[in-house]
Structure formats: structure tokens, C-alpha cells
Image (spheres, rainbow, N blue to C red):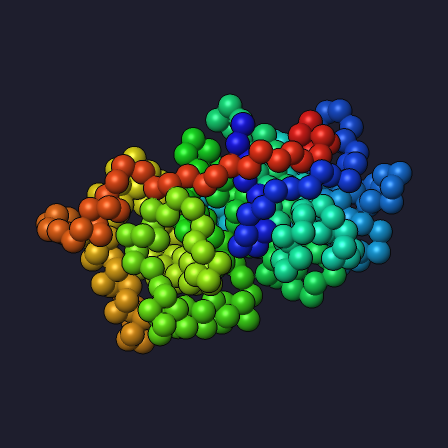
Length: 324
């Protein structure tokens, strides 16, 4: 079994769970939301794909389950071409009333984050889904939740071979609030100005996270590249490209999906986009493929068979979240 936990843009070990979540009655849950409370004061509400566990004192507006189902469908339509089969097991959404409760659950590394997602994969299927959210943060519903839910949705497509971290983080950050996106852009400009940015061949094939001094550049470049590629193509096209790269290599996947010669050609286009104000650019993947003349040594590195997998964690989540 492999596990992956995201704390917005950081991975860390999950502390032992203190939340005991009641299980639904036999016979399965209706798509209509059902609510109840457990002995510890956690309000529990269910819909077809979600089980929301809300701490006492954490207030939410009515209709959260409906909003979650709508957001899930929108994300699946955009990134997975509408492949939105019902989730079994359901995704736990754990809403914490305080930062202290949240950090106790996800670990000290989560002090600077507002959300964390965990996906467990075993036997070539997802066996657990969970998102922890700081309900006391103002933008959790419009920023943190879409970001973390994107991670969970992408995991469904990349069960056999996990999505490379630059693509996973880049796609999730596209769901961030405008304020966070501006911070990413500021980090990118700073990295480019200081010469602290990554060549794309390095970014695409990273097997470990960079030194903390370059983390800002890593996240900023990841979201910038994901945004660029989803502008010259569609979101589902981007996911297909990442999937193909796992077996064919990045150069071949770029040629087949975008009619881009290879990683060096992609880098040239992307950096030109950064310098020049963006103009609508589209790539017709059906046109005659460009010649395979990408001879840069960096591109040869990126043409390696498969993007790196993330290091899967060995931590555990609550027994309730594993036994649906």
C-alpha cells in the first residue's frame, strides 16, 4: 500500500488520529445528505461521495454537501473528461475548529498550512481518501478545499503510477485563491531574477524536493507551467500528456499530445510566454508532428522512461477512515 499526504504544498508524516468517525448504517448512503453527531461532539454529514466530520464550534453555511458534490463534478469534468464514478470509499472531510486541533491531527509541519489531503492506494485502487481543513481560516471553502480536492481527484487517474509532484502540485495550485496565485507569481519572478529557477528537464524529473531555499521556485514554476500548458491545450489534454509521459517519456508525450518537439522546445515556449504578455496560443495535436530534432542534453535527460514517483509515506490514518 502507498500513501500520500499533501499539506497544501508540503508532505509530512501524519500524526496518529484522534478523531473517531462513526460509520454509516448498512446499505450504503443516499446521494441526499444525512446528518448526525457522534459521542465526541463531531457533527457528521454524508452525501454520495463525502463524509463530513465537523468539530463543535466550526460553523458552516447550509448546503456544504451539495457544494462539495458540485465542486467534485466540476473538477472531474475539467481534468478527467467527466469520469466521475462514485467514490467507494467516500472522501472524509474533517473540519477543525482551531489551528491547534488541525496541527494535532496532521503534525507540526502543518502549522503554516490550512489544509491537508491523504490518499491511500492498495491493490491498484484507492482505499482511503481524507482531507483535513482548518475551518477557522477565512478562505478554506474557496481556496483550501478546491486545492486539496484536486489532489484527491487526480489520484483516481494515477493509481498504477503516481502523478509526478510538479504536475500534481501545479494543477492543485491552479485552484488557489487569486491572492495565493499572486504570491506564486512573485516567487517565480524572484527566482528568475536571482537565477534560482529550474530548467524544465530538472523540474520534470525531480526525485526529491529541492533545498528549502528553492521550494518557492519549485512551486511557482510548477503552477506556472501547468497554467501555460492548460492554456495551449485543455485540462484533460494536460492530464493525458502526464499519463503518456509515464510510459513514453516527456519528449514523445509532448510531440504526440501538443506537437511540441520536446522539453527544450517547451521550455523555450514557456519562457517566451513569461517575457511577453500572453496571447492566445493553441496547439493542434492532430497536425503533422514536428520533427524530432530536440538535441539538447537537458531534453535527453527528460526523455527518460518515466517521471519520478512521489515518496509514499508509511504513516497511518484513523481506523475509521480505513474501514468503510
